[in-house]
Length: 380
Ligand code: GDP
Ligand code: MN
Image (cartoon, rainbow, N blue to C red; front, side, top):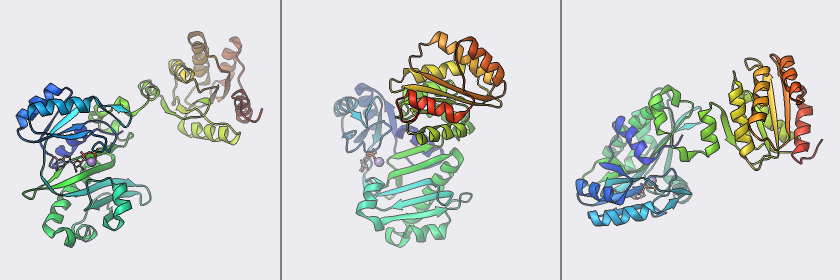
């Protein structure tokens, strides 16, 4: 789950990382009022989920309330990364002497956390990697202890940036590490980390990505979720406790369990077709969830056939069958639907489905070949 800058700032500040004074608003008038309160030069910034706002015209300076109003209105008229700008951050402008890049992220290779530092901040890390590969330092962190002073200072080349500054970067890196591990971040990036005239370090921009699986452990973070991060289907599925990921194939899948969902998608591919989505209806699925799942799948015009694949355990096949029958009476399902179920109460499920004139397979291979043929795939 990606956070916007103003949300990321809230967490940085909670962990003691200095940020410039700023306020959020959504109109030109408010921007003007904030500029008056802060006084002097301000930076007005689009709050969107994508980076590269500066280049897209979403980060601009204003010196007076009038200028703030004009600049704010202009930014509010932009679309950045396919997203309309609806919110702004008006921030005290910082006089930067130097800009650094600092991030902590999950490193799957070392199964730990990795810290990245560069004295070429202000540009994206991808650009820095292309133009100044030697100026990017990667340090792997002890996932329980965080950065350790001596290896940190050697690792970021403290000699080159100055021992005193390097020690202060260490302080911020330690806080960023704590934020990352205590709030479950996949990525916590400060770019630029600015060395301000007068010598203080301040996070001028921050981008946090939280691990969706860590959010339930910190319920207060759930309110940070931005609906624009996901498609409307994904949001609707989440509200119904279904886990759904849209894909670009043409076979709609409704499966119980993430593992079986993945295996089903693999098999569809194996038989020459492509899944339109991943959809796990979860363990104890009630008929309502099945109805909801059908309504999400049938709405997608790219879906040419639907496969329901249930391996009944905790999930009872008769519940799913009732859901299918109910869905048929409530929603117009125009595409061919192939049902395969086996396991808990499958006999009962078959009776329920037969009563509604629906046939159900028990063999998965057979069911998949059938649905692939319906979708116009290769094998029958
Ligand atoms: P991004 O383009 O989405 O990464 O947005 P940023 O917030 O990082 O802004 C883009 C660039 O504008 C930064 O890399 C800075 O160089 C510059 N910038 C933003 N705010 C300030 C500020 O208060 N003072 C100075 N000197 N530069 C700023
Ligand atoms: Mn930035």
